[in-house]
Each structure stands twice: as structure tokens, then as C-alpha cells.
Length: 463
Length: 65
Image (cartoon, rainbow over all chains, first blue to last red; front, side, top):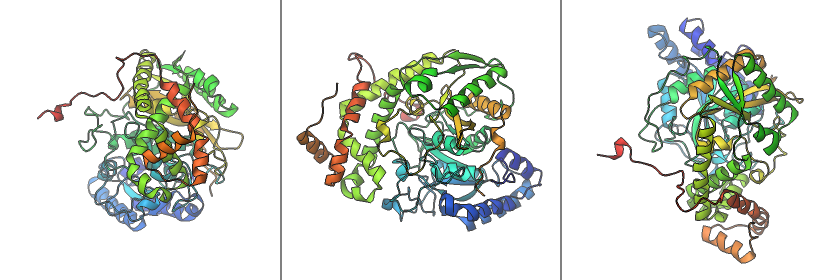
């Protein structure tokens, strides 16, 4: 990874000062795609001509009138479950190989309106679930830090693409960790916003009540820039929140002195004990936050296993309902992993589902009470560095509980930021969680952490 | 404790879901049914009949012409 690939914040500044050409920036990103993507498989569909045309148009507009937003002229990618008018949207599935939407998803529309340059569609796990299958139309994405290792998913192409500098940011979606997971394993920043803050309209569902759309980029500041363009009410999404959108960058850099940060020790020390590098990252983050003037407290919640069971049951049933018609008629056309997830739906009763939804209210209320006097809480994203891509358990949902699912269950904002590197040289991460619609606070804490630590200076050795 | 699923119940649930599986898929799936049952037990708490689910909603302004 070359240091020549800037952050969005840096590029926007240079573009506004007419020191950086969007066309040259786009060409630099395309060069990296051509050089790296036969090994990383971040893209399922590269829109090279369109990207160059959009970059030229952006450059002309900026030269005439200045940039219309910090994203004007910035090369991005969209996860391939996001509808794009006139561009194939396959959800990485044999079932949708010929699908060319006739309209854009709201998130795609908003990013285009902000002046971004669309580089193409990014690899996903099939329909944003199911893990890395090797029997899908295109191969799974590979981790730029070590191509033998998993990117996590399902926003796998976005994680790999941003980490390798092929794009400056991209859209991820998160039903049980699909933004935060790839952000963690690929060493970038990823924010799952509050449920309803970013429209789901035009994005293939995984589980309706757990699905979130959000930004993935190299830094928290870049996520803030992207979220500014994405957030806001959309009547096309029945879950869309109708409330004012704050300035997410306004508070960045103002420090976190006096911030109240809770640590959910039992999640990562007892319920699902993390490895040494992850624990070191969390301990280091606590020391960093304390050094920046934050107050650290202990937080106790229900066991991680309760949150995982609740979210998993809801996820299994909502996915089975969404894809029932194809599961009944075309089950063999799904990849192996997605097939297994769909089969599980047969074994959860209606009463089981509703008990999970009742449990969800209890858990959400519990977190609300626990966070009443806190600004954010902290825990792990994954227990360790990324595993080998060919050594993943097929039925992982029944193995160890996820650190990310609790915050899909609660619907509150949660962010993954890099907190160091393990013995294998791959990144590890911390998860910063906020109260509903307090993304600005989460971003401020994440930004303060990134600026106080050296982890944003290290890029994958993908060259 | 969750009750282990028997062959008839397993076949019935698959048929009811309309899923056609290979024998290998059935055999593998049967090994993880206990995991689903354990999750279902974990969310089942003594909460009484009045406890509301999370997905209860009110009408928003735009729902009221």
C-alpha cells in the first residue's frame, strides 16, 4: 500500500485548493485495482470508463465552481447488494447474475449527489451472509495484509478495497457485524450507524430489523465525512428516522476530556475470552483514553451469549422469510454457506422468534440503563487477528458468540477502529459503541484514539 | 433443556418449510439442530404475559393523512 493514497479529508483539502486532480486520483486508484485485484478480488464489477467520465466531470465542475462537498471527486465503491441503475447488482449470487436495476439505492443516490466517483461494485458474501463460499460466481475477497487470510464479511470487498487503497471509502452493510468485522480484519474504520439513520431502500435485505447501511474508510474522520452524505430521512425506507442530521465533523479534534467510557470487561474477558493481541489493544485503548482525560468505568450486561442467541434467531428467521420463495424453488442455486443459513429457518418456530423479539426489548432497555451515565462503551470486535480463509468453521453461528451482534440487537451506533497488530502482522481492533443517534460522539472518541496512536500510519504490504 | 429432534419431526419441519435437501445436507443439518434449540431456550425467560416485543410501533406523522 502506497502512502500516496490519501485519506478523504486530505484529498478533499487538496482538491478544494486545486492541488489534486480528481482525474489523477481516480487513475491512481484504478492503477492499484489493475495491479492488485487479481489477488484481492475486492471488485466484482469495475466501472472504469464511468469512473473516468465522472472524475472528468467532477474536475470540470470543481474548477468552475469549487467542490460541492468533501466527497466531490473522491473514488468510492459500493457493496454489490446496493442497487445501481444500469450497473449489474448480483449480490454475489447465481440467482441474480443478470440483474441490472432500473434505479439507484438511496445510499448510492446520495453519494452520487455528493459528487463521488463510482469505481464499481464490491465483493460481498452472497446476499450479505453465509461467509466466504468458494462456489459462488466470483471468488471471495482476500485480506490485503496477507492474502491467505480472511477479510471477514460480508462487506469483504469494501474492507479489502479501502485497505489496499483501491478506493478511498465504500458502502458496507451490517446485520451482525458486516461493516465492523471487515473493518477490523482489514485494519480500517467502519461505522454501523443507528438503525434508521441511513436508508436501506434499494439494498438487498439480510434481516430487515437488524440491517444497517454505513461507511467504511481508512479513518474515523473519513467515516464522518461519508456519514454526512448518507444520513437523513427517506420515505422509501419504512424504518427511516425522521430527525435532524448533526454536523458529524464539527466535534472532531475537540478532545475527549471528561468523556465517560464504559468497558464491558466480561464480554471479552469471560463470555468469549479474546487473544493476547486483542486484549493488549483494549488495554492500550483504555490507557490512551484515560491519558486523554476520559473517565473509565466498568459495565455489566447480560452474558454475550444472550445477545448472540437473540440476534441470531431473529436473523435466521428474517433471512429465511426474505428468501423463502427462492429457497423453496431454487435452493441448489445458492452457495453452500447461504444454503445452510436458509435451512436453519425451518427449525425456529414462530413462538421462538417472538420470544427472541421480546428478549430484544429487554436487552435494549438494559443497555440503555447501563449507558445512562456514559458516553460510549468499549469491547472487542473479534477475539484474534484474521484466520486463514480456508480454515473457517461452516457453522460458526453455533460456536463462539459474536461481539458485534449485541449492537445490531440494540440498534445503536458501533464502530470498529484499528487498535494494533498481532503476532502475524495482521490488524486487531476495538469496538466503540454509542447511544442511539449519537454517532458524533462515537466518531469523536474514535478520531481521538486514532490521532493519539500510530496505527493509521501503517498500511498493508500488498505491493 | 432443549428436546432432541427425532427423524419424523425433522422431516416434517423441512417439508413444511418447502426445502428439498440432499441426504448429506440432511445429515449435516441434523447435527446442528440442537444449537437452534439451545438458542431458543436462552431467549425464553420468565417474563409473564405482558412483556412486549421490541417490534411494536406507533404511527408516525406521515401515516396519518
